Structure formats: structure tokens, C-alpha cells
Length: 170
Image (cartoon, rainbow, N blue to C red; front, top):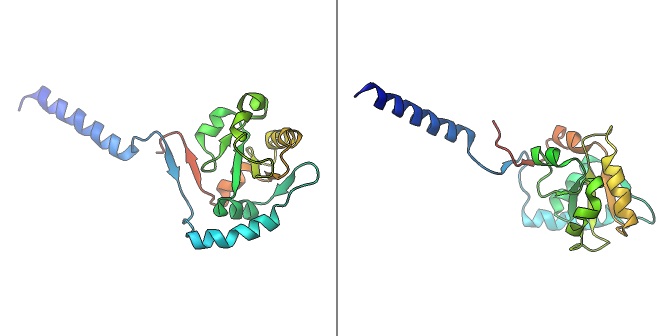
């Protein structure tokens, strides 16, 4: 074999190896918890309904444990209130992007839900106030089951909550 042919084979082989290692995907799911069975989900629904009642005014706070229970029951819509780039980097699976500054532009995503649907809003961490701003706007818009995840996405990840991303994971 001549030298240029070997070089081409090495380059192609390297590319194939990298592609396999990186898993060329447009959406990577980083699941850290085992999925629940439909029976488990049905058992959680009444508990979630009791825990997350309609609020007379304002929004409520929620711990990781209660947010995880709502996530597992598939009753809650998670709202990511961080800037778009952060949302693309990592989010709770299925979360909607709703940055408070863009609320009027993206609130049409919420039109498919009842004003009594359960929403859990989060931002980066306890130091971040974007989730609270978004929750306040949602409450002003008539939603009455809006809760803020106290520790944000950092707390969710620290407790081994499931994450998804638009980027390839190394």
C-alpha cells in the first residue's frame, strides 16, 4: 500500500472512532434515575394532587423531593427560567423554556394548559431570582398552581435528578 492510502485509512478510522465515542446526537439524555412503572405513576398522582394544591395568591416553594415526585407522576410541567443558552446546555427532561424577559413572546407555549395545571419553575440555584420573576408573571397571568424549585437546576443535578441537553456529551 502506498503512503497516501494508509493516511486516508487512518484519517477515516479516526473519524469513525470519534463519531462512535461522541455518539453524534442532536439531543443527549443523561438519565440518572430508573423509570417508574405505570402502576407506580398512578400511585403518585393522588399524593401530588394533595401536595400541590391551588394557591390563593402568589406562588409556592418546593423541595427537590416533592419536585421529583411531581416529575415522576408526570403531572407537572417544568419551566426553565434561565437564558436560552443555559436551557440548551442542561435542563429537566421535557422542561419548557420560559425566560422571564421573553415571557410575552413565549407564553403561547402555556396556552395548551389549564390555569390550574401544576407548574414547577426553576433557574440556576438559590442565588438566582429568574424563577421567582417568572413565577410572579405566571401568577399575574392567572395560573394558580405555580411552584419554584428552591435549589434550581444545580440542586436537581446534585440530587441525581434526570437531565437532558441539546449538546453532545463527552
